Image 1 (cartoon, rainbow, N blue to C red):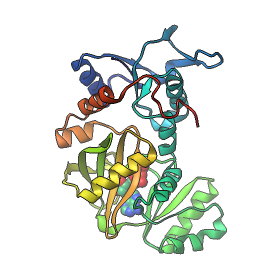
Image 2: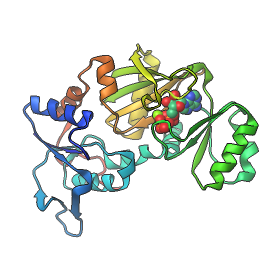
Image 3: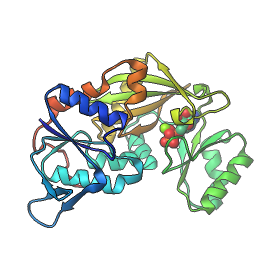
Image 4: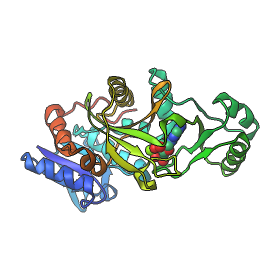
Length: 301
Ligand code: ADP
Ligand code: MG
């Protein structure tokens, strides 16, 4: 097969591993710098151009689109879809997953376990918003945040009110969430490929920190997940419409709750922690599923 990887940098661990795994299996791989692809959308024959050349003949495309380039990246991916190229994850599913609030609403609709979460626009509604999610302690999150930045734990209602007022004053989009204290600063990253969790790791926040992000000094270790957690992760990915996803789960005393679903999960932490060939399993998935013109949406919607 001829496989395109949409990635800004061929030297990133995840990109390198995908190139390796695909090449090992005899596929032809080409890394396309997402921001250098440009498109002709005006004709009946949609095309993608790259550094002066027209891109043709791809069987599959692996999107590795960073959060900061979601808008342009999903447009390039959509163009591949319009050309009938099989996307590992579809552009609409990636767009959905990048909006935390929209994601939680979709998951809630299908009954996936979530932390109690509230959302409001007006500062007048702050007291009621806080009581709606069960009062302090609570977590306030910027909707567009990543890597733990913009996630704040407020131990008291007074602190929560001030932080909410400040964020609202800055016109930031935020949500308020019950604090899952019993998770003990740990979460579980489940790597879903197709309808299976193929690898899982526990991430533990460093002492004195509640955010388990590796970028915030968290440490990763192996974990055995329960059948309920496995099912929750697979359902979450499916609801989002993602074939490959990193589903982050907290162990709450009301069962597993999904915190977020990541559409371009990093491979380095999960491969080094679990010893699993995640990149290889992703390429295997593409081999089994890639057919021309089989995109669910073909870039629509
Ligand atoms: P980001 O997209 O920035 O990673 P997350 O929603 O994943 O934001 O939050 C970052 C970290 O903060 C999580 O990995 C988790 O450890 C912790 N956290 C987030 N929400 C909660 C919550 N409701 N209860 C307890 N811990 C939380
Ligand atoms: Mg996170």
